[in-house]
Length: 369
Image 1: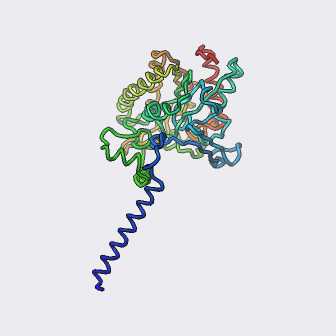
Image 2: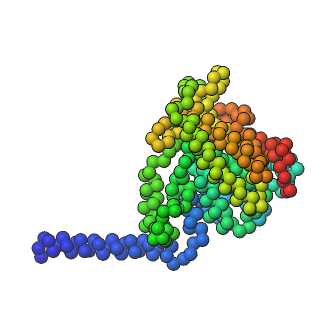
């Protein structure tokens, strides 16, 4: 047999083996035969029936080596385990999710304990925070995720949002906090819903594709140091982008608020504290690298200006939709309440839960439980 024939036969053999292998992969791991009503939530990074111990002794001290993180069958976290008893639902990104704070120590746990002490004994809180979600993801959660939880009828929905939108979130992270683009073909949607190989390739793509990051909000230990606050002016063009970002955020927040109203719930918007700026010397200064947008680095002052605009929108829009606004950002939190410049330690989470509970009572937010 000639060398050419050997090569041809080898190629044919490898091709057949590859086809058989892909077919086996699809038949075994794909969704061709069984209907999975929850499959479309995976593109939103909704984790279900999941328990994991995260290493925390490298990011903050005094709380043991690991945190226990649990998500139930519906993808919810928190102290309330019976869906029909949930009367408060919390929505947000990683500062709501808090995967590096153990079950029982989140701000939702603190809030529930406080409200039960403050004459609301049947308070039952579920945590629907998802790491990385912005208001793009929150809209998709209302469209895709929450309708699958048929008995979910909270009285109050707490929106602890803004941190992930402040870094000029003018477009969603495709396949992360939004399910699909309008430009997707029917074939692509069909493959995305059914194919195991497509899911694998998309996972690899998302893992390798760089996304805008907040440099001090990466779940790593970041000791507070005044020496880092060296920026005294906003970056060129930052304030213009912040205004554009505010307008886009306002439209998305309005959609969320209208959806909450249709659910028969009341929205409670809560601003978020952060350590991207410091004013202890009498002059507000920011860290040099707060986040990156389209290849440009923006500083702490830029982030602070942006999130302040978003907070102003929440303070206006939430009450106009029959809801409430709690300004947690204006309250004093110590550097030791955070393990980086955004995410809180259990100590900070407890303070936050206490604060929200006190504000809910002070503002006479309706709580018939």
